Length: 153
Image (cartoon, rainbow, N blue to C red; front, side):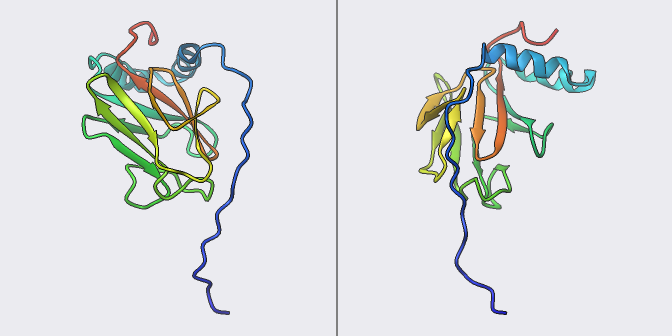
């Protein structure tokens, strides 16, 4: 049987989920569930003065994975060269970018098939705040940066 060169891609129809009470509360709850050494890593990011950020997979497959975002930014996608590699057909090869700007970290959707969602809302481009819940395909991520010292206890 000859292998087809056509690529199959799934389209998700994501309706707005129940709104999250507060992105900071979601992050605080997740961080509280982490082992002490993992909380220390998050605390280091939060004390970086906004120079570094981190994306955590907080639900589903690959839960607990974390990705550092520096001034160089990060690409998110299913392509093997992505900084944040999310291996599922619900994620475009080049799905989104997180870039470090003077005003903070900017998330930009790269024309993905399924879209990018922040706190349940579809976005094309948005400055991220610590605690923002990001959904890309079936992956649920949390954004962490040095904007709040009250999250880690």
